[in-house]
Length: 413
Ligand SMILES: C[S@@+](CC[C@H](N)C(=O)[O-])C[C@H]1O[C@@H](n2cnc3c(N)ncnc32)[C@H](O)[C@@H]1O
Image (cartoon, rainbow, N blue to C red; front, side, top):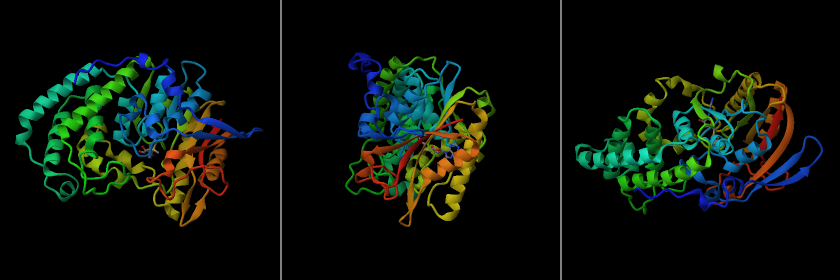
């Protein structure tokens, strides 16, 4: 378990790892506002360097989308920062930290908040490894005292033994005092739930895989923690500890007072895609085991969830609310930004009953009505989204006009 930490000498130089997979940019229109195509041919594995692989988050964007935006719109002074107001699993925060840029994230989900903070911050892996050894000893000494939760959901998705073991690990982590090591272990714990369940590993929405071989929970957990430690050892050496990366729990329709300092140079914003998928069933296994932690991490403020942006199914009412949400949340970012600052919205078109909803165009119209002006329009391709696991409704730009476009729309205040 105490493998020697690999060193950065593995990489040609410090920048190699996060600059290697940046999009290949083709200029489609060069007069103002320019239109470009960002081609991202890399695989998910390529893009999961360093701590990006800590947490498998089904709605994340390729790390290089945030990376490319940060390359192009780097804050002018050290007082300035980047804000991701739909930060999800913290992709923007990791990319900003790697470049020495201060960043903040905001998300309505406590789990997103801790996943982002774990991924984007220097955490002592020796403390994590010590705590893991304590956990394993405690697990071995106490597991017989526990039983699997007795409900239909657990019986459907987990073997008796796996459910019992998940309960034991959950109890240990739950009783730890709050610290970044606790957060680290919790992210690893949530990260193995799907793997030790009866569901297919590779699918977005869980389905029972009758042929799945049961994995021992404690060894899956211990391996996950060890793998994360290896990535964190490299990450810790790649970044400056002093660079700020902080995700907070909150609603982007009501930005916390602290951002009202006019130092937000760039907002990177990646709302759930209209009609993409319903998050609740996708994360149901993780939330089953994660729910007891919600109170600890949201300081009892469960109400914040009520403002979660709904994006599926794209019926008339949800579509209307979706665009209203976009308008309100960019009115909020407009308030906190100074003239000359940027907003980059990563968003895609979708279809409803076979008909195109031009979300990219509609977003431009909404955001311009607030006072921002269109600065640059990029369409991206993500080849990995076209395979077996692609959604029927998903946006992806592959050249022809009638296809759904996945946009990275940059505005300037
Ligand atoms: C598409 S994901 C962002 C993924 C992120 N770019 C990444 O790479 O991990 C959208 C996120 O928006 C969050 N969200 C939804 N409604 C929100 C709201 N009102 N305020 C803040 N975050 C919200 C969801 O919890 C989800 O994590």
